[in-house]
Image 1 (spheres, helix red, strand yellow):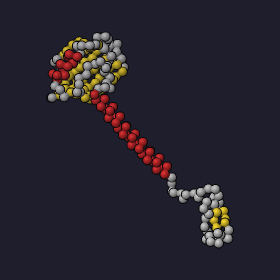
Image 2 (image 1 turned 90 degrees about the horizontal axis):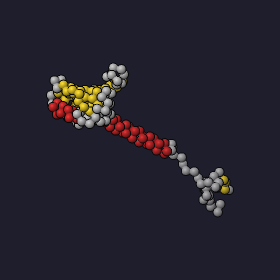
Image 3 (image 1 turned 180 degrees about the vertical axis):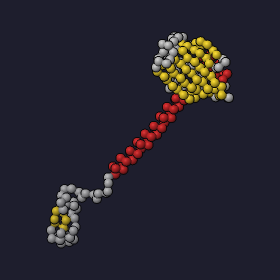
Image 4 (image 1 turned 60 degrees about the horizontal axis):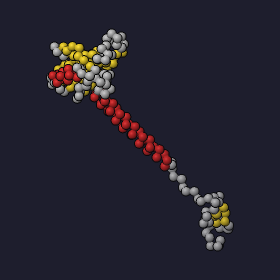
Amino acid sequence: MSAQTPPGQLSPDGAWRWDGRQWVPTGTQGYPPSPARRGPGRWIWWVAGGCIVLLVLGIGLGIFGAVQLAKRFQEGSLSCLPSDFPRYSGTTVTRDYTYFGTNVAPGDSQECQESLTSQDDTAAVTAFYESHLSSGDWMITSNDTSNGAIHFARRSRPQTVGTVQLLGRGEHTDIVIRLDS
C-alpha cells in the first residue's frame, strides 16, 4: 500500500502523513484537523448589534416617557393643586409654580400658582368655577365679577384660601389659580 501512496498524502484520521518512505505523525494525533480561523469572531457582531438595539430602545423609551410627562403636565396631572380641586376640562397648563416660605397667608407654608388656558369663553369658565367652588370641600368667600376674581376657601381647613382669576382673551380664557395652604 505504501508504494502506491503519493508523498504528502494524509491518513484517513489525519494523524499521519506519507513522506514517500514512511508514515510520519502530523502532531494532531487523536484530534480532527482544526478548521481554518476566520478573522474576528462572530460574537463581536452579535454584541455590537445587541448594543445598538438596546441604544435604540433606550432612546425610544426616553422620548416616549418625556412626551407622556409633558402631556400629564399639560393636562394638570402633575399639578400643585389638591386632587379634589375642581379642574376645568380641556385646559392646557401654561405655568405651575409652588412657593414654600414665609410670604404666604398666615398659618400656611406653601403657595401654589397655576396658569391655564381654555378655548372656551370667560362666561362658561366662570360658571364652572362658581358652581364647583360652591360644592364639596370648597366654598366661595367672595366673587368680584368686576375683575373676574373668585375667592375661595376649603371648608375642612378654612386657612387654606385662594383665588381664581379669569381673564378673557378674545375667544379663549386665561385662568390663574393661586392657593395658599
